[in-house]
Image (tube, rainbow, N blue to C red; front, top):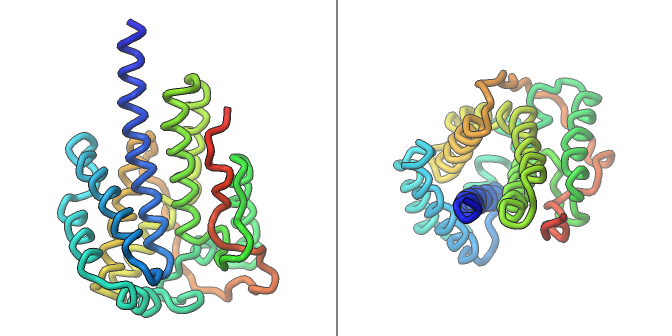
Length: 255
């Protein structure tokens, strides 16, 4: 009986690790491409492989979308990806399809600040903070996806080394963050990007939106209310907190 329970835990841990790999890949593709695309291609191969294996099990992301993304990433070179990134999302905050959650639905600067504080509060609750020096706010899509990468990674570890209480805590946090944040605005972003480009980022944001929807369903979330996009003046960068990617020094499993 104990052996059977351990097998089930190992299977669930492997699934959580596959989910974590997917979130990490998605977090990377929504930052400007680096000079060496090899790492991104490798991350993509692992993540898309994990997605393919989950398609039959969870009715997950459409296989066609996965294959389109795999082909485009393999064919595109880093400079071309960078150019399309900036063409789609702008060099600063795009008014057409911003990658920052607080540009959606939070019409006033004080509402934006409250949302930023809520997002940062999620990060702090798990020992994470926006690292100094890389230049993105806490509400950037890449950072929100990176946070889910950390939670699912820790879930995989907890399923093998900690008890059910820790697993429940981590899954409750995943559910809450999807409900309060990603599920509310990523589908809207995807629709906006479709109006702007037919290139690789259209397919990447479609992949992200489909993945967020699958995850929300798997975590027991009913279809929630989406935000409306009403362009407003962004936060004054001088008043924004230092920003970039999450400080993954804290990614090591905690008891």
